[in-house]
Image (cartoon, rainbow, N blue to C red; front, side, top):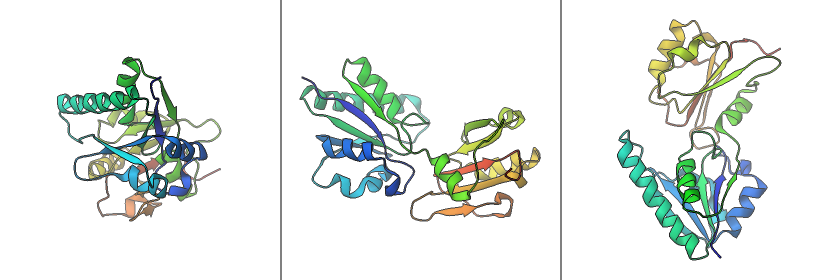
Length: 230
């Protein structure tokens, strides 16, 4: 009997936000796979912390580059390595930040393993934008409000025209350009930012317009068109 692949969301950064199910799956898995962006960045591994004591750890290269061929090749290698473990009867827990279904590297590997005929399961986690809204003490959407979730690294001009609260993920290096576009659309005064939510170096900026500094990769910008909470 083959093993099973679990895509485990470990939340945005605070270890206390790991769900009970995620913790159980991590403890029970024969092997824990952790993504590595290529510069030693294994944030998900750090969040899981003591849950990994005594576990066999496998590293999956997930380079943060724009070359799609290199990225796809890395996904295929990771899937092949995981399939070999599953074929040997080992259950594998692949750790991912936030939730595995929201702009996650894991889902590409999940599909490849699933296509190879092995059993898979997604274990949801707390998304970074939910944790960020909690830090700000505001709602993402309420009443008849809508919410649009956008990767800040892609063109956002058309999104600014949508009548919805806007959530820009992974806004770090794109923050200056994003602020300029928000200002041009008259939305900068309604924008807030949370950087490194639940991690070391966390920053909470209720008024993005008043912040001049750069932010890290794990930055979330929330624009509430409704203004003040009702």
